[in-house]
Length: 539
Image (cartoon, rainbow, N blue to C red):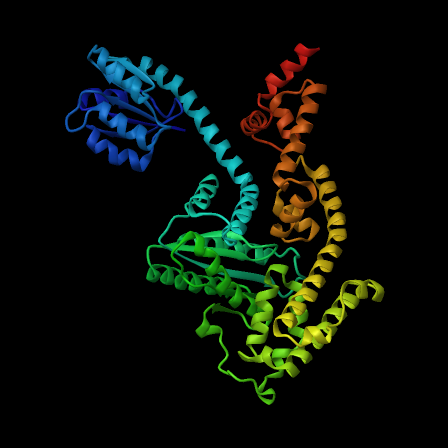
């Protein structure tokens, strides 16, 4: 029901308007009354009526002042001004404020009801427009997430200046300005599912993490195909540290509800400038790399104190064999990304001691072991032939093993080659998945419930993974592809049938006729009726 609020200082007039009109019987909710603008304003803030009826001349706060304040805070509220004064200046000011109607007193109940009725149609149209806009923005969230992910990629590369970053952020409706920044990287996965598979538990947890991030002053970004990056902002180090601590406590409580998940997070160092966020990211990434070096859940801070090994000089007999366990490398090759390789190798060696890579014997042993581990992974898990392997990955030479940097670069190179082969293998799989996904869309586009999440569940991909692959394969986000497909079907029906617009909307997946018209006009530049009439004119 359309809500009506009345402000009138004359008691008899106010009672007459309130009681002489059967508001409920005519489809209105008479939600409140006040004797002056000052009292009314705080009440209006709470009940937020659709239509405000107010006298102009009142003590404490007049109707024009009240109207000005209401329009500034609630621009969608329609206002009817009542006045016993025929003053053009009042009318002129009312028009400037945006008042809907300007009526002279006395006015009969029937006349007032007619005016309210005419305005209520505008109220319903504006309400439907707001709801359609809100729904459209919600549906376009996937595209926005992809744009945010691309922005974050630029943010951590520091190739731009602060002004450019701020302008990019504004286009995404993100406030990036602050005095201090820090980054938390977190990945959550299910022990019951393979890498990248759909998991309802992980989906719920990620939504929970997003909510926790926002409530603690952080901006949340998708991180590669799995994982989230939380950018915390604040005025000082204490504020950011406290917000991160509270967020961690809340996340740990969230994780307790799920038995079959693993999680790991890396926390960076606080920095002062937007252009230094990449430094915070580097520290967080070093800590984050430890997820491949441990089987424990946890949150690790990236700093010299937290990450350093106490052993300055390497004594081979003191090295813990678990630090050179092939399983750690295999786990990284299965789950890691090329962007993480350098951090993983640094922490892999750091776990053995600061000077581990300086030991020629240890360096040679690890290099050869890493080579055999990579070749085993490529041959037996990725299915390459021996000939293909030898063309792409070669054993380390004496020249490589004789130099610390060359050894490190070699290990990084062969691991990245293995990850690239994994990506190439996935492309064929992606083609099959995408064929299945597109086929599913064509069969189910008329179902309003069709979404990225439901499609991800069907093809057994995580939503973030599917979103990235879908855009990579089709050149556009899933929601745009679905919207375009539905619009093409709608245009075909407008051309070939005499069905009404609301019927066509329902047939292509939009039960709400107003939203269908809104979306059709937004994407095609004209309403369904205008589109059909244009075709008739052409004929």
